Length: 454
Image (cartoon, rainbow, N blue to C red; front, side):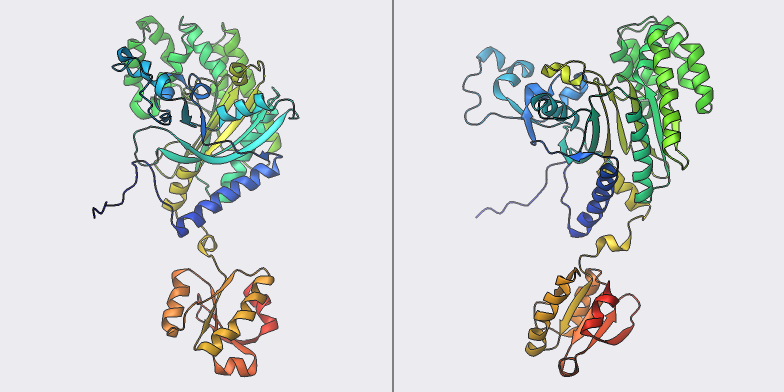
């Protein structure tokens, strides 16, 4: 019999119990923040019709969508002349795809359920997404997103609350080294106008979005290949090197975009968002206006956000923005929304690198009941039921084994307390409770256990 060596697809990972405990800590923390701000939970299928996804992320995004082959003989109806052309053959052999993000499926859901929803509709969604990207550190082909969106209102309060949620979530996770970068797509449209490239915003955004990865010179090279003239590039150049405080950047933009109505509208929105956010959040907001922040997704139309970790070298750990007509492609125009997505996998990597996970996150049980023989084992059974009824996560060692082995098991699972049951404990009702962290051991009555262990 041929034995196949087990393996995983590139860009995917298994998560063992200790890692899952840490991931759950991240997810539950972010979820609690979402709930605090009035968001409701939602889930959508892993698969969407390919037509739902394509055309929503730009050309580069569309190339990263994982297509699913049709069932059965998927080549049966393909015309011979289409066999040599991947673009022609895909619609014929693939009708479905794995979701690329959670925002487009959310827009599809809103349109399909618009008569049952109350607007503005606030939802959060925590599910995996898939992208056929090149795997590297901090970038995976399967990863979780934690999204929160408000749809059905143009109020800039929504953007300000997103900033406040970002601050609160990272504070609760213990991540102090982060910065929220914010810009506005209207400003980028204004920059295109100043450069005499009106209507070329998409090309400008796609190129500028790579600034952190490939640097200014290669961004300029890419813009040249897309037809931007030397004069246009000269007009764009001031945005690359401008440094200063947020207020100085606002002043610069007012002057730079003076002749662009849409650009000035974006600057005013930016000012108002920051002002409301500062009123909402009493602690220091870690906001930085970044004139070159673009975010590559083509559906953004207003404010855009990106969160960077400052103590670990890694890509953005959260991002989002305002989209004015994402539902329009599904037949419901003029439904403005804004959202944020936390990158759980990158947040995990940051917290792991900085050793930020509390010890309690990897504790599955608070107490382990250990025993010397069959009689002691049987004594443990009603006791474990009583502990669990009090809400104490607990377990009995399942076999009659040496005490050293049982204690080693407790240590391997980071169980902080062990109750040792032997002949004397059964006779007296005084149980031996051992603190596995301090090593302290004491005799306690059964009715004292819950107070000492909790």
